[in-house]
Amino acid sequence: MKRMLLASLAVFVLWKVMDFVIHGLILGSSYAATMELWRPEGDMRWGLMNVVAVIATVAFVGIYTWLVSPKSMAAGIKYGLLYGIGVGVGMGYGTYSVMPIPYSMALTWFLGTIAETVAAGVVTAAIVKPKV
Image 1 (tube, rainbow, N blue to C red):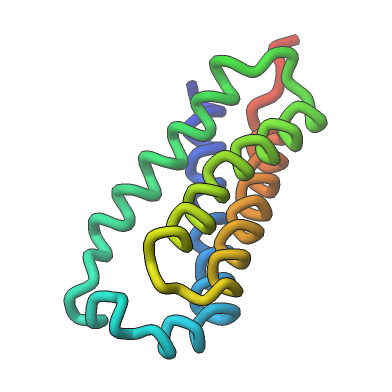
Image 2 (cartoon, one colour; image 1 turned 90 degrees about the vertical axis):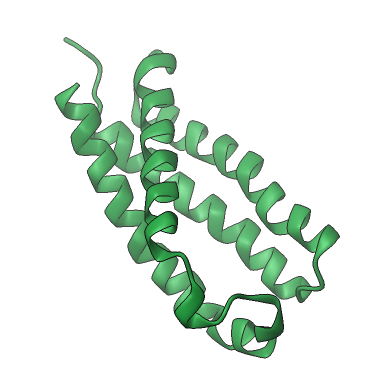
């Protein structure tokens, strides 16, 4: 349980840093160009966004901890890749199918999600090791 909590904390921090790079640096100008689609900065629900991130983190690490066997770095990478494809296609292309976002934003959300989950798989596998 201690390793699961430590992995969850590490993945949460990792995802926050990667979100800053993806959404702040890479997509910042795209968000500015489509500002009519988003809440104004003062109306953003940042507390809710952090709760969502904590739940997603615990779910990601929990699935690996309780359901992936045998545990290894290769398993963590494969798990992260599959999880990322599943979540990323919905985030990127699911949103693109119903909102007028630029294609480059959909693609970046998709690929960014995969990058985040593969990195999280590596971190999780490094911390949640098999019992010896």
